[in-house]
Image (tube, rainbow, N blue to C red):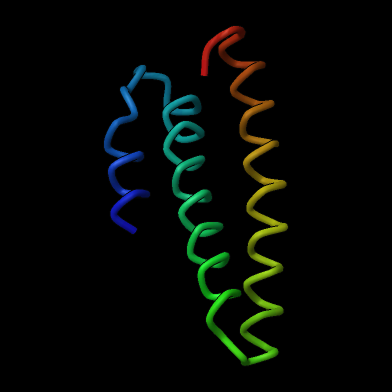
Length: 78
């Protein structure tokens, strides 16, 4: 959580709400992936494992979509 918050805090605002939203959401999603990866290593609960794996898959896909959108909105910069 600390890593995620620091990454989100380090985003420099552009004044473009779309770009700023995407740039903030990437570390937020990465934080969810990091937490899910940790719980996969420690839980024995099948439902929690399934949920964590789904979070990892979904959040990685969404990060890729956000990066593509950023490239369209701000070519050459991320």
